[in-house]
Length: 288
Ligand SMILES: C[S@@+](CC[C@H](N)C(=O)[O-])C[C@H]1O[C@@H](n2cnc3c(N)ncnc32)[C@H](O)[C@@H]1O
Image: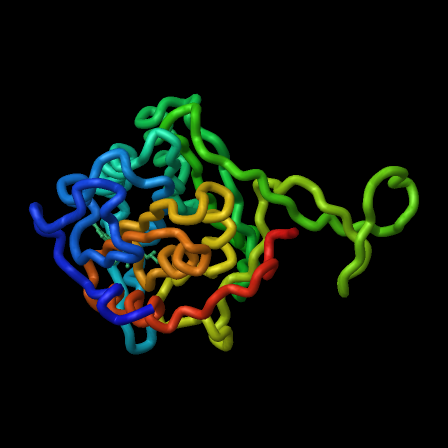
């Protein structure tokens, strides 16, 4: 990708695309996600993914790179008062067949789920996806907290959805009369419909895709989301994009992408990743 394609701009009314068809392959905008509704065409996104601060009470910072504050004085109302108007703005940016994924964890997912049910209507809630991982750290006082929760809402009942499959590993070969049994290095398996619990490794320091951004999410997670909910050339957005994982996943899969963040340092990291993007080998993951 060339560097001009991933230039960072400030959203300026009058200089933004007014229609979905005029959005370039990738756009990076510096600003508050709460202002996106005023500068981007309403009803235009096929998918919006957002991975906001989690109400963790922590200041998130990489070793030397960018970071962000996730401190709310332990006041969940203050957090919700900040988050919900931004999520409402995102809903209005969705195309009629579009969907929103809100990525949170145990700190705030429950009140936000209730508020999103009000915002979208309970019937528009599609899935609670559990992203399960194994990272270091445990406690003698509670179970190791090793999952995040991704809430999937559709703008209308006529939402885009491409069922995916996963490998279901078998202890033995027999008893599966008319089922095709395949084999890989882990053993025999058959293809089954993808469940709502996803085992995807969290990023570790020695992984090539890792950049020095706290809370960076794995590309495999975002590619699965993009495949599930969009088609090639569709418009994907992440209005709190951090290091740009969603945008890289979208670009790898031939979707257009708009990223926004109020941190210029985060956007610079995202721009660098987009310039250095590796093409994806066909059939890398998610089945045939
Ligand atoms: C959890 S990080 C996102 C990480 C990202 N998914 C990745 O893989 O790198 C949250 C991001 O939200 C950004 N952010 C927080 N409040 C924002 C706001 N009001 N508008 C835009 N971005 C915001 C932060 O700067 C941070 O980059």
